[in-house]
Image (cartoon, rainbow, N blue to C red; front, side, top):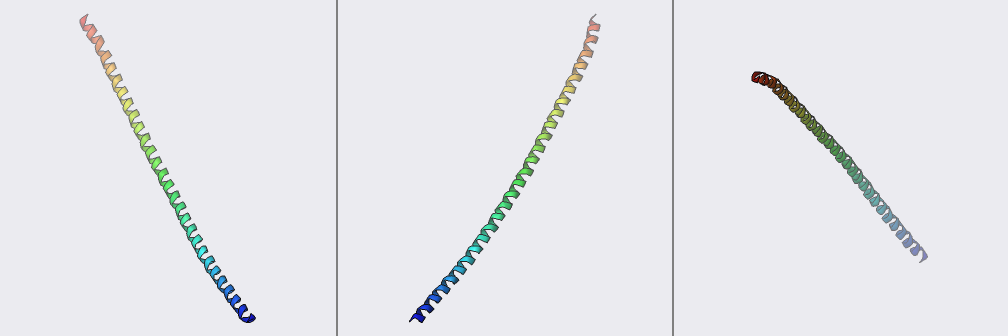
Length: 100
């Protein structure tokens, strides 16, 4: 009887060890998959941040270009106004001299 009990105990212990090994293997596979997914998410996050950085730089470039165009337009307007003022000031003396 003792021998039979011992055999049952060994069998149960072996089954428990097999179950533990199976559980250990499944959990390691799950953790490896979780880690792979986490790495993929981190890579996607880095890629998205790089994409956003490029977009910000592009928008800043457009903004700078627009500022430069506005400045050039202002300078051009200023030059045109100065030309008109000079032309007007040159016409005044001739008008004044014709009246006298």
